[in-house]
Length: 248
Image (cartoon, rainbow, N blue to C red; front, side, top):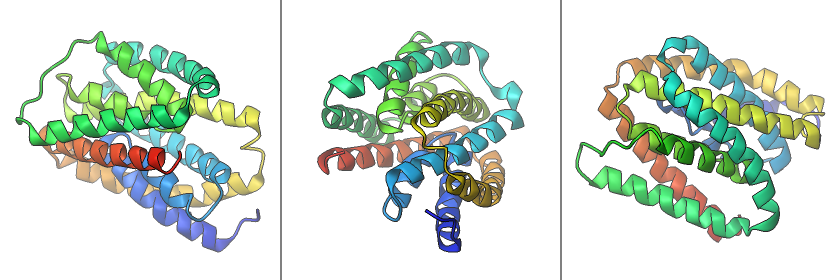
């Protein structure tokens, strides 16, 4: 595939939307970008380009407010995430991906709908649940490229501010995406100049959308950010269910 202006403009538009959502909530860019872009280009190319863009976004959010990262959460989420990615790489070979995708989509959308329809104050869960969130998120990341929902559910039920939630989500995403990129490298998905050229051409637009999202995020209350997270989780769950029903 040759680098062309049409692909760059299309991916720039999709990346702008995905980066804006990521900048406001701290996750969800892949859940938006990959389904949209895969309608126009083959999946291997789409996964490689947006993995490169996602890791740039994750580095940008993480380094913009490093003190906002909740270290106690990160030291539990990150190792269990890495373990989950490794486990997911094994499970995808032995378990029916469609059934697992259906289960993940049902859980995520069910939780999101409950949170949106339930009382304004959600229950707080213990820090030990970080291991469950990290492991399940890593598995989902390896199998479906959708590791964000478990991390977002967990952190939204912890007593943290909006900046802490977003920054900690970004750190976990950084590790998850980085692990995925290593796997892509071994699989040869990053060996094409077209992949790198497209990502480099789109990155400035993606970062501009992220900058704008950061300004919007600062003006939102914690409750508004949590509500945005839950709406995105609901949409993500529905998207996963559609993929499962359509045959993953």
